[in-house]
Length: 325
Length: 121
Ligand SMILES: Nc1ncnc2c1ncn2[C@@H]1O[C@H](COP(=O)(O)OP(=O)(O)OP(=O)(O)O)[C@@H](O)[C@H]1O
Ligand SMILES: [Mg+2]
Image (cartoon, rainbow over all chains, first blue to last red; front, side, top):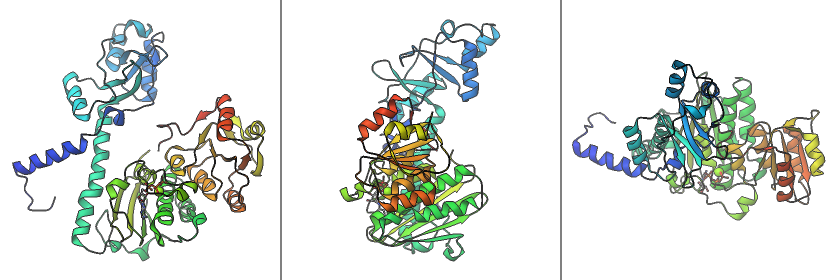
């Protein structure tokens, strides 16, 4: 918020309305963890405890072995079992059977309401056939909201600010707002868009360069995948040359990919999974799933895209050393 | 788990490039659109694809895949083979349909590396 910007009641109402709209389309299916660790009821409470310890989870759904949900064992159940000295009993005897579950279609508002009403830490998501399809904890809800906020941050605030100020965004950091000294970049690569076969060479070079600086393979992998997606986009969509700039620091690796081509008319739409304007010809080259920008967002810790039709694309990504796993 | 050489054998592949080692393969990712591989692919997988341009090798390399199996195409361009050598990415060619190749590998109980939710970094 800028200085002098006071929140009136009206403002707050507007804001809440806006937020409600933004979150209205999020359902349990979008938030839930799909690869759920489960046990069958013939296992022991001890095994449930060990599983929870190793997987760092606070509850294990119990199924009949065919994804049919039968109960859940939570930390509380384990504590009771330890206190009562029946930790070696089969799960069947002590699991919680009266379950509150979510359906995949429930919207975020309902989910939050349920969390408040029942105060359990996690809820299984069950389809209409009683099959366990996922699990949601409070952490997952916060994660989904933060993810959405990141998108607002990207497309609302910074983007509007930059466009309104009508400064040349080719000279400014989209994330910090500082002027970027491109000549100070640790790594510079010129993207040639005329030869599709060379798409990705820049990212491969960046990868080799990073290898000389760090042995954090996860970081290197995240940076190179995201940069590769951005580079391919320049070659395939922009119709213009472009540049990759990178700055490496102990704590954060910053990558900036820019082109001067046809630009993106609607960035928010372009960020959606599956959105692509790729022609059949491009698809034959292996691109056009509409997963490039979502992948960049997935692998980076911060990402801002600024673009307007006909004005090229500037994309900035930050990767923290201990960032996304 | 099975070795790359065994996979080459059961698919009757032509070897276009292979390194000195015979790596273990844990899982299979089948895709023609590279962003799908970039989203979910990871170490220990082989990429089975109908794409024969250098991008398939580049994509496999970026996600740290073990090898690339190109399916069905009449031939594989020299540029793709050159890149495989340069990036030290084993590259083989199986002249059968995607369906058949995946069916054979599936029967060997190899995992699905592109199954949603796995290997997401
Ligand atoms: N540098 C760019 N210049 C112009 N348009 C772009 C650029 N980058 C992305 N776009 C537009 O945004 C859309 C979405 O991009 P995204 O990378 O997510 O998917 P894609 O490139 O179409 O497919 P994929 O990346 O999965 O192969 C593109 O189809 C294109 O319309
Ligand atoms: Mg793309």
